[in-house]
Image (tube, rainbow, N blue to C red; front, side, top):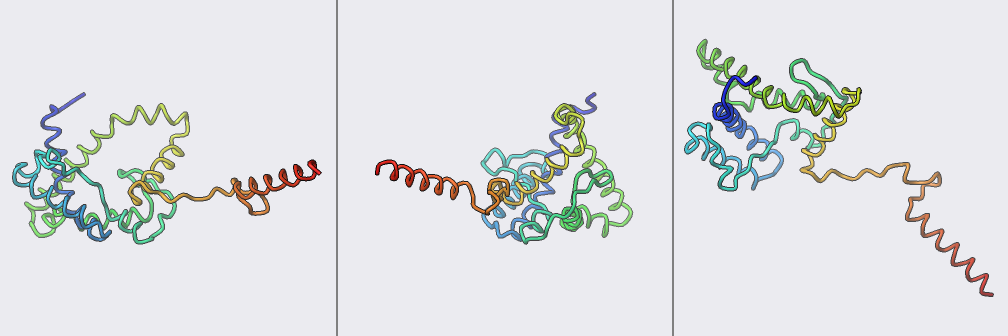
Length: 213
């Protein structure tokens, strides 16, 4: 059941996405993505002004797409290992690295400082916006629940674990995930398939030469 119309829902989503662009820009810089950082700070300026505080996403209409960079990705960029898979209460799939990343993102969120330095009114405003953000996020993922349930085939935990870990690696490496050699692709002697193929060809050549004689 829908409580708000699409226009209101989009406006709420755009507002929090605009606030998030501040942290995204900082993480861009920490990962040396300076061009992308310039695009993301431009997004924030345009949407904050022309977009009336971020309610409207005008930046996307002028070829400044939304990027997603967080402190967990920054830690991964600097070589911090992910650690074991975790499921955090209310937060869902995570890892020790991404849990630390959530704390880092908290300090990159301007709403956090409204809560700290804004007194009672600031704390109330921050709490209200946090609840609204969580509600908006939950509304956004509800449509995926049925897809997940149909794809798991009874093993929901493993499906979510595998999907989360692969997605995070994809984000950290910007889609260029390093190829890991599968040990099953090599025989017991340590030679890979190409070496085996080459040796087989040499053996066949020797056999052919012997036959010709």
